[in-house]
Image (cartoon, rainbow, N blue to C red; front, side, top):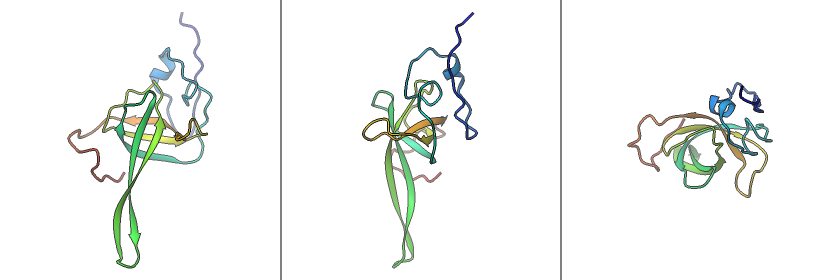
Length: 130
């Protein structure tokens, strides 16, 4: 018999991954097993960097309207996001991130869902709106 593991239902229609329930990692900043609540904004973005430990960089592309020229310009923001060991994320994946309390100087979001990359050949800096 395996000992009971503390897991939490994040809410907002987000499913707790099986790796969080059956895993044996310890992460106090994980929204499923740690002491972090997801509240505020829920966003989607493209993973462009997984070089840090338990932190990823997510790129969000958007269009900004210029009234004078009546056209849109492409813009983007990079967001540092805490990634729980429950997810195995690679560059090019699309992740859903939820806002939480500040976890470090730059990290204010947590990965709550993950979709594997559809086409890996697309570059890191190509413009993709979700």
